[in-house]
Length: 235
Image (cartoon, rainbow, N blue to C red):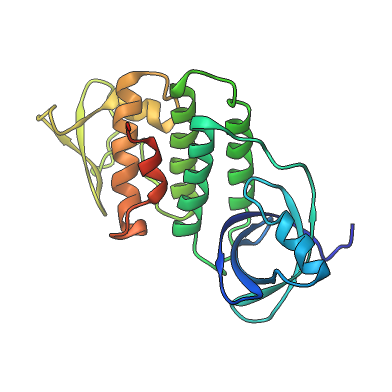
């Protein structure tokens, strides 16, 4: 393998011109990059065939500015065959990553985080337990927030006191968890401790972790909803 090649995943692609597509690529040791790729011509047709989601790629690119140019691409492994709910989860991982991971900012561990959770989803293709999918998504969301600098301090409340298993806490942006007597709007300390450990096996923990992650992701996503979330709605 040429030393110029890096491992990468395609997060999103869209037409740019008759002969080019714009790509959101998650690149090992780099982070998210925007790339232009040709899709016409003999070599470009091969590029186009390889540019599929959930395929571990080897890419070589150039460009000194924000926009890079895809020079060459190879399949590193065969595409992961996701299906059903797992496929929807894969689409969610891709859309969330493309939306919240900043472009051209050095985030060396983001690729490994995505790769690890995509492999977890792939291992669940034949599973009928939808809770297993949720465990993977919640784990990805909270670790992604942590790596982006928006992680939550689960060990202590806003006053610096250790989180108590039996107390209730309300989360406030910029401050963190504030102790409250209103259990209807608060998180039980035990639940917060389980979220911190990425232990989402309990129904209450899964439900409250989902609500908290959505609240934390909202400023990063803005007002435009994630289209992939619609796939999980009952039809």
